[in-house]
Image (tube, rainbow, N blue to C red; front, side):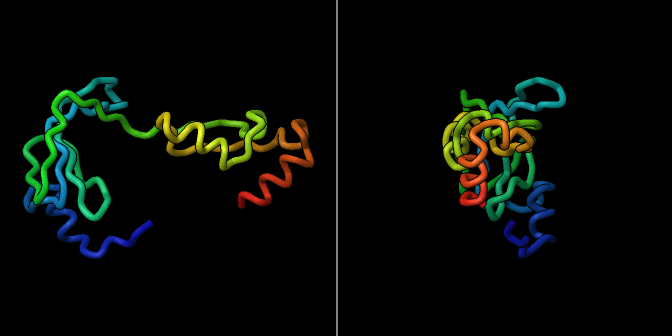
Length: 125
């Protein structure tokens, strides 16, 4: 992860006190805690989301009216080896569909093409 160069500035951006580098305006953002889509802005600074809400100002602003934004999916328990794909090929299949993180449980690695899987995992490390 990149180190935050100016935390004080980042906090001011998050609070809406200073302009963000980029603001994605008027999108419908999915809030997983409530299960709702809420019209919201997203303030981005140095590649990080500084905040979501209304009335953020940005040096660059993009109107996303009519667009939906959802957080990345975290798959909390997956056996990549059972997909019969290498970790790289598995990633190529799931990342475009919104999966950003997997918690891999490779205990079946010996059950499914053991030698092949062991070699794939070692080469992918």
